[in-house]
Length: 126
Image 1 (cartoon, rainbow, N blue to C red):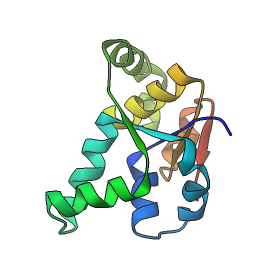
Image 2 (cartoon, rainbow, N blue to C red; image 1 turned 60 degrees about the vertical axis):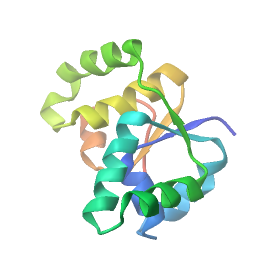
Image 3 (cartoon, rainbow, N blue to C red; image 1 turned 90 degrees about the vertical axis):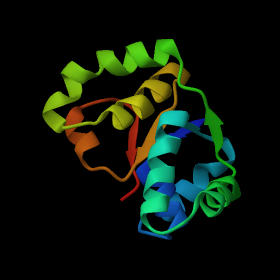
């Protein structure tokens, strides 16, 4: 199986057993997440009442590998702005896409706006 890049929405769907969780679980053995998307995930977990220790444990339990967000990825994410602006993709969205582009991987998300952005290799989990 090839590597998959997870958006924070995909990780949250998995952690909260939301629709699409099964699609995320299927790619976990080869999944990575950008540190930027980890920050988004951690924020949402804390918003839902988990303290940092519990949030760290929840993410660690998924087995997803966290990868740094490099200068090159920052430039790629910035370059995606023009083509994704109309779809409303955020910096976090573009960070995920930049990592997927860099690794030649598919990006998994629950965010339907990504389909309107016309970017390749996006897998909508629901």
